Length: 353
Image (cartoon, rainbow, N blue to C red):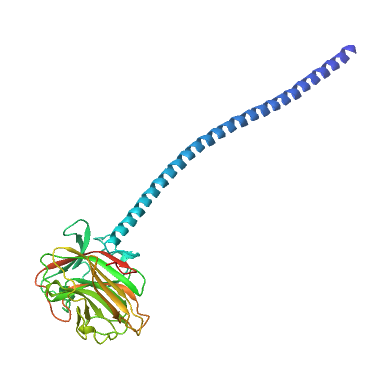
């Protein structure tokens, strides 16, 4: 019996020791797992810290590079602005810019003669045939060239034989005063004959050319005349002052236009000119309209009592590129020849001069 009791005690002791060791082992294992997890978390935190430290360094470097790029671009923009201001100041000193330029012709494109910046509303003739982009005849860069075949003139019913070209453009909004400025070059073999048309301004709608008096519009195209004389050819819907046709440098030819500044300036072939006209519309019912003509920055003609309109709805709204030999008369080109155009601009003010 003592042996049985001892056996039970031994077995119980063994079970207690086993259970104790087992429980203690599980606790130790659990604690070990906690320690391992803690170690893994610490290692992961270290990895994350290294990643963020590396990213931060890279980010700072990228920020520094971005700031450097922005600073460089800002300096370039500032330099361009300063150069533009200086260019305008220099130009103003010789009689070109006083206030601001509303529109400036973009670079010529041989594939798209005018491009969207011109906002061309109508091509009458010449596109891609007698009007094209080509090299400057006496300098660098591209210019617009008008071709006048021999025997061409504006009144030819066959538009393919008119020479030159015509289109209307509205690159800016309407106004009561505008300056049109552009450069022109007549080829060395250019024969002025009796005259021809050059680009000018237009306002309103209807037909203000070809001997038609339309009360809805006016036009002020430049013209070359015989011997290279020039003028602004005014079509207006209203009567002018009674003495206008007797004034110096004014030529009237009813029912056609009035030549303003006729003989006040003259073109020669084989050189570039800067040609400008300033128009300030009259108050309807009054003779207070103004026209000025400038050649190479010098004012050559001015009149202060014109009537361009009898309706306040008529405004200066169109650049009318129109060039060909002749007018109300047949004045054919005596040979194949060219005129070149460049640097078109529209201003909201008068040139200085």
